[in-house]
Image 1 (cartoon, rainbow, N blue to C red):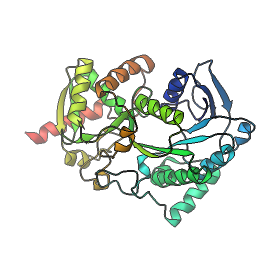
Image 2 (cartoon, rainbow, N blue to C red):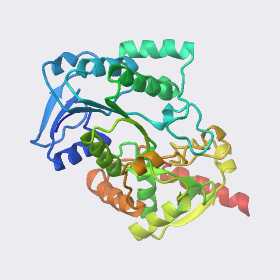
Image 3 (tube, helix red, strand yellow):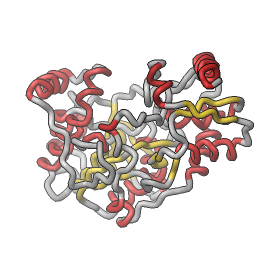
Image 4 (tube, rainbow, N blue to C red):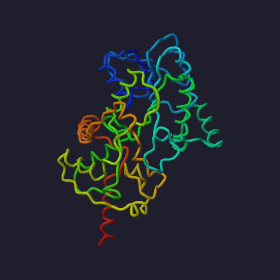
Length: 346
C-alpha cells in the first residue's frame, strides 16, 4: 500500500512507520520537520505545515492516510477535504479524552462526546485560526477539540474513516516520560515513594501494540470508532512496580503514601507523580476502565507489561541516559516527602 502519515516522527508516529515498512508498504511523511527525522531510505519526506501547505499534497495519490497529530478541527477538516479524492481511507488518532464523562467505568464507543461551550468554542476557533495552542488552553479544550476533529473527518469522508481513541500509551520513545519515570526510578533502587492504594488499577497499552493494530486496520480498510487500550481491571499499581523491580533486578523498597498526604503537600497528580489519580478526583474514576472489547474482538493483541518494562529500560539507557525525566518527582523532593511521611507515622 501507499501510506501518507501526517506527523510520523515522534513516539506513535515512529512506530507506525516501522510497522508499515516491515509490512512492505510505501510510506510518505508530511510534517514540519520540527523533530528529528527518521533515517530510513524507504520513507519519502514532504516538509510542510498542515495549516498552510496542503497544496504540497496536490496531484498525489495514496491508499490511506494516518493522521497522528490532528488537534485542531479546522486543520483536520482541511486535510480530510484536500485528500478526499486522493485516498481511499482516513485514520484519525483521537483520544479517550473525547468522552464527556469519564467518572464511570466501562465507557464504550457509544458514550456521549465532550461538547465545548459557546465561550470555549470561541476560544477554540481563535486557536484554530492561528494554529498556535497554549499549554493551558489546550489542556482545557483538548477533549472537545478531539471530538470536533473526529466529526470533521467523518463529514469529509463518510464511510471511509476509522477513529482510534487510545487510552494511556506507553513504551520506548515516549517523550512524556510518565511510564518511563517508574521504570527508571525502580531500577535506581532504594526507598521509593509509591502513591495511594497498592491495589488501584491501571490501564495502558504498549505503543507497538497500538501501531501494529492500526496498520492492520488500514490494510483491511476497517471503518468505525474504536477504544484502544489494555484490559481493564487486571494491572494494579503494585503489580506494575513489582514487575519493574523484577525486570531491573532492583533492591527498591516501596513506601506507600496516602492520597491525603500527597494532596496536602500539593503534589500534582499525573505530572509530579505519574499514573497517580487520587480517589478524590471522582470525575476520572473511569479513566483506567475504558471498554476496549470492540478492538480486542477485532484483533487487537496486547503484550505482557513486563516486556514493555524491559524495552523501556533498554531504550532509556541507550537514548537519554543523562537527560532529566520530564515527569516525576526529583530525588530531593521525593526524599523530603518520605522523611515527612515517616515522621507523622511514628
